[in-house]
Each structure stands twice: as structure tokens, then as C-alpha cells.
Amino acid sequence: MLRNGSGKVVPHWLIQPSDGKYGIGGETEIWIMSQDPLEPNETYTVEAEGIRRGKRKWSKKWSFTTTDRSQ
Image: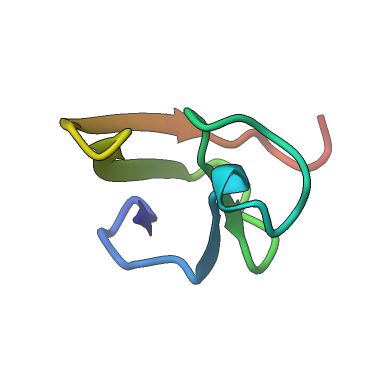
């Protein structure tokens, strides 16, 4: 899940290279890609969870801040 600084969900694609659709990536990767350009000077939060190899549950949460487009 990708959210902006206000907590609003940002439309995004979740790409799991391990599903074999794209012929790239490894079994321990996911890619989250915004469907539209991200806003400048905005903090976004990503939350992801899953089950690795059908056994071990995992979850991650992290944030990042975009810069001004003029930089």
C-alpha cells in the first residue's frame, strides 16, 4: 500500500516478479510503482506484507520524501 502524507492511498501497481509474468526479478522481491508522478516535497509511506515460500510471514513499513522537481 502506498499512501501520501495525508494518509490517502496513492493509485499504484504491485508487481511481483516471482509470479513469472515479467520474466525479471527474484522470488524475494516486490515492486510498488505509482500510477502517476509523485508530488514534490511530499512524504509517502509504503506498507507491504506477505508470506515467503508459503511459510514465513513478513511485513515492512517505510517512508520516503520526494524532492522539489527543480532540483
